[in-house]
Image 1 (cartoon, one colour):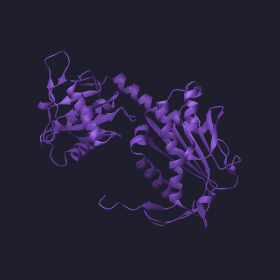
Image 2 (cartoon, helix red, strand yellow):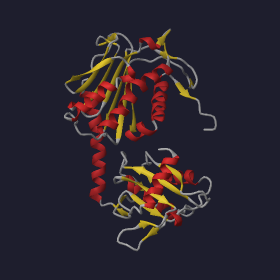
Image 3 (cartoon, helix red, strand yellow):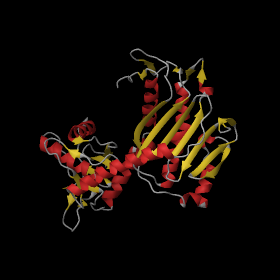
Image 4 (cartoon, helix red, strand yellow):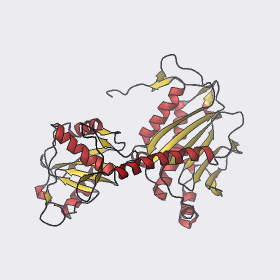
Length: 378
């Protein structure tokens, strides 16, 4: 959401006097200069992350004259936001919450033209890595109640830990038991599996005409071909022939919302060196873009596990090109098949796909003894 759209959304909340709820909290101001102030910030934000997600708006005073707190009129709202406050808030939340919040959003929102007509927008969806505990000697778990952060009961904390363990187990089962199709024989290939940890089987949804029409309109990488059903979902059959089961590549969309992509890497290799930039484009076109669109359509939300597998790659090296350079003792050739995993979320796919792509590429480059040069000023 652009700054203008976000500002319009916040102003609309205030103008219609939207009440506080389990997903929305108003604060007149924010203080971050003492230990209790920092802990209060951690409690408020982690309580949303531990429940269903929500927004804290600093710079919006409350009207408590009714049964439910509502914002005061727009003319009474706004505050001066000192330089560096969003970064300070992010740093405090890193220091005061464990494990770190994975999808924190902190932005300045304009409520008018005057310097004192700004608000601070702090948002976190339901965390895929919950429960989160406050530090600074507090050592407690909070969840959002109707209008405030409340201490979680032991059974609630245990339930979230059990959910986290079950989700990880679900992803492992997917990668070990699902039908991803054939691999090329004696040829280097890359397979990407993207598995949402929390999902419902969407078998009936994926049979509806609306969904089938969406498939027809969304070929992976805009390649020519058609979608056809297989036992666990839908598979894209490209016109171009190749080494992956007779086709150039294999993309599958499972009933769970998971996605897999298998691609022959032969065309990406020259003089026994793989072109990392070409692999990056491949990951985006045949895996991340497909998953992102599918997650939106199927309303898949929460954490995802991405597994990348390289097969028949013993002795393969990688080009040492910008932004990757050799680390200690590198670059070097792969000893054999290589597998690694990366954690992300559907929100990261939607709003920060390039960051996810860079993480995957950095992990892949490190397998060849390469690392990414720090960005200028970073």
